Length: 203
Image (cartoon, rainbow, N blue to C red):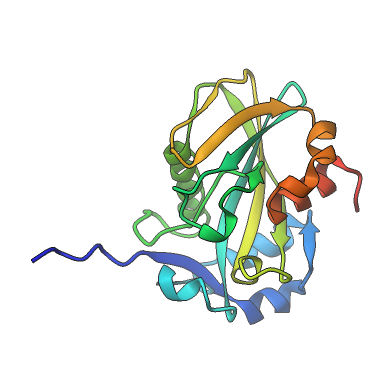
């Protein structure tokens, strides 16, 4: 008999908790206000991913990492091998994923470990870097967005030494933000929000 795969449990917060801090649609740079509450183990819980994906009463916390070198931003196209079918064939500037119950540590240390694990799973990053958390994304206007909350990081790289590790990451390239903004309709919603607010002058 084949052993069924283990059930993945992902880090979530109750949606009313997020609303209590201050609901927003789109992007906010107010990192400290949100993360000190959202990453507090007193408020987080792990839910089966299969049920969390259709449960708008909870938000799954997702690190969403952008990579910049000499002012140019890494972008790629999501292949059909990726985990989130609703995003297949869309272009993206974000690397990241769920925080799992198998990630060690607690609180913000668990979050950071999960972020670097997701990066290591998706790309080969062969450059020194400096990273900064620059904001959060919320998009209640799409089925994917209603059950996720993005935490946005920018990694400034010393060199453009990034290669895809996962087969779902296709057509990688660094390009000026102006070029990506001109092609905005090709990108997934979170990438559109990041490009507009971080590089397009949208407040």
